[in-house]
Amino acid sequence: MVNNTNNSRKLEMYGGLLGGLIPILVLIAILIWLSIAERGGTQAFWAGGWLAIVAGLLFAKDKNKFCETVMRGLGDKNGIVIVTAWLFAGVFGKLMVAGGLVEGLLWFGLKTGAQGAIFTLLAFIAACLFSLGTGTSTGTVLSLIPVLYPAGVYLGANPPMLAAGILAGAAFGDNLAPVSDTTIVSAYTQEATMRDVVRSRFPLSVSAAAIAGVILLIFGGGGNIAGLPELTAKVDPRGLLMLVSFGIVVGLALAGRHIVESLIWGNISAAVIGGLIGKIQLTTLFHIPEKRGMSTGLIEDGISGVVGAIIFALLVLAVTQILVESGVMDSILRWAEKTIARNVKQAELSIIFVTILASIPIAANAPAELLVGPSFVKPIGEKFKLAPARRANLMDCSVCTLFFTLPWHICVIVWYGALTSAAQSFNIPLPSIWVAMMNPYTWTLLAVLLFSVFTGWNRKYIER
Image (tube, rainbow, N blue to C red):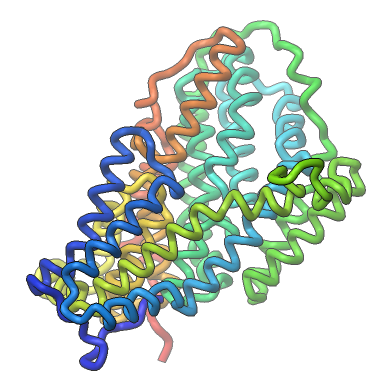
């Protein structure tokens, strides 16, 4: 994604490599500060990116060349592809919710008559399907917890494991969905096709999900069964038809169509299906608002929902370009090559742990991929001839492990907020936020990933 540095574009900084590190250090410091204060978020991070660029200018010897570097980062071709895909993915997620997918999945779970651990497993599967269809982990927990958590508690599910199971399902879709921001970023930073990425990631993600499902089936029961409240009024089997649109997006992406084209057809089919089942009206998509400043409909809502991520992503691309052209990333790469990446296994392990480390202080995982993907993962992987899809999968799976267990990360914060509201509304147990550490999918995914590295399973090389 980010252009490699060369002699003509060498950006000289006061203080040498330390000066080149200043922008990223400023950015990370602000991200950690906001995250610890539980005020993290892509929009809140804008100031960090802005201040990082300003700080970099102060250390640049040639101010004009510095500005050109920033502009190259902002205008990166692959970055624009990511931004465009995000725009249509944001609208698609809104359409899936408006079309009643939540109500349909809830109906499926409740009508089976499952109780205890079976319901916990079904809640996990429902979260997997929803997040896989919408590509949003935060949207999944916000949409499913208000109904699945109370229903599961009343049906005898173990409250902490049920809560962790829904979070685990949200992580699964964020990891695998073609419309997920992490999938989009991982694919295009490594110049991999979406088809290759999803196909080769599927065995890794599904293996981890299967193991996580077994864990939830074993430990997800043991609660007290009580009378089910009037939750049935919120279910609607018609919403399951929205899965057809999800199938269209996945099918087209796997068939090699461009992700933007796949998303457009998914959006169109979702609007049509939602209209046919009476969930979405034409005016729901777009209408003239009563007052200036009010939403014009789902299209605007979907786009506005990803604007924060888009702007922050552009700022991160600019900061990353500074790292590249100032020679910082070249120095780090040479060090990594000499110390921790002497063979293909060590190279893959370095990708995993560098990505995880980058995701720890940052409250959103796609920006962490933007930091390490172009400047570290891509060159390390290319040196050892790893296929673009393999590099993308190592990075994406890594960023979906520890990230979904730490309480200062966006999805975990949103997940716990929804849990708190549901527990208060129904007067049911509220687990600790540290229950996120019990997220079974993140740990099984890490185990599967390490197994893949040490055994060579699923490893692919660049075809000559």
